[in-house]
Structure formats: structure tokens, C-alpha cells
Amino acid sequence: MEKTSVPLAILISGRGSNLRAIAEAATHGQFGAHVAVVVSNRADAKGLQFAREAGLDAVVIPHGAFASRDQFDAAVIDLLRARGVRLVCLTGFMRVLGLRFCATFPNAILNIHPSLLPAFPGEHAVRQAIEHGVKVSGATVHFATADLDSGPIIVQEAVPVRDGDDADALAARILEVEHRLYPEAIRRVVAGGWRVVGRRVLWDRGVSSSGHDG
Image 1 (cartoon, rainbow, N blue to C red):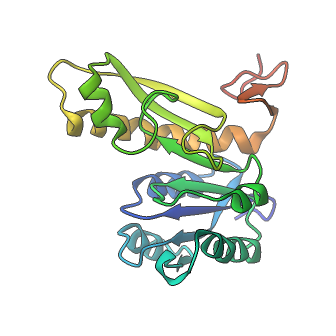
Image 2 (cartoon, rainbow, N blue to C red):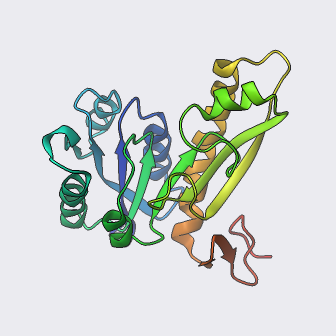
């Protein structure tokens, strides 16, 4: 692993399928970052097994052991600082981050959501898409803020909704897109050439949103 690569943390609460996609992309040198630590707020998160089998540093910080969200956030912040983390990736992390956490890593916390935000924020986004009868859904990687699913959008990709889709079928196709989109978002963020203006991520002149010279 190159010493100059950006140390990133992956925060999980469940199966960690996007954790696997990010870790594999890092292993194959697809972006200038490496997984410094995997953190779960649940000891039974299935993603922990993959992390340990992959030789990653995997740590459990149970949120129930703390009297408040701020105390939990502080414990995670201390761990990430100790690992030198510069970029945080949320992959199915079922905890809303507080202002203190977001202020510690400004424009350096990424989250993925299974819809074309700002449509269908929060839980059950895929089910909401089916119930509303939309013809196009998708996935969004955005900078996380203390306001749920409302941070500046980095990348999005559309996924058509088929007439025969139920929530499970649509979710499976969106997940395939997520596994490709999240590593690409990390690559773009690490490569630089962007800035946040209001709620928009803007790419510097001469650099397209795909990270290639325009």
C-alpha cells in the first residue's frame, strides 16, 4: 500500500456489500485511498466477518453503550483520528451523524442512497419509488451532513423501473449500480478538482464530473 494514499474509514451496521466493493476497488488500486479501519455500531453486523477475513482493521463501537448520540460520535471520532482517517464512507450505517461529527470531517463524509436524491430520502427509498409509480430510480453518492440525505450530490446514476418490478427486484439492480458508483465517487473526491458551493459540488474548469480532462 502506498504511503501517500488517503486513509479512509468505512462505517457499517449490516451486511456491508458496499464495504466489499470499496475494499476490492482499493486493493486493485482503483483510487488513491486505502481502508484504514472498518467501524460498526453493531457486533452482529455481517460485514465485520468480511472485513476480518480480508485482513482489515475491524472495530465494534456499540451505540447502546453510550448515554447520548454525541458521546457515541465522540468515541468514533477519537478512533478515526487515531487511525489518521481523512475520508469517511457510510455503507448502510444506520445512525444519523451529529453536528460534531460532521464538523470534524467537513466535506469528507460520503454516503450512498438508493434513489435519485432529493427524491425519496430516508428509509425504504426503493419501496417508496415502487409505491409512487416512478419510471426511473437510481443511486446517489453525496456528502453526508447532519440533515438526513440532503448533502451535496457527488454522483448519481439512473436505474429504470420495469413494469414487473417489486421492491426486491428494483433494489437488487440498484445495488449493482451502487457497487460501481461508490468506488467511482471516492476516486473523484480523492483526485480533487472540485469544490462545494451551497448544495452543489462543482468541478474545476478543465475537469469533468467524470474526473477526466474536458
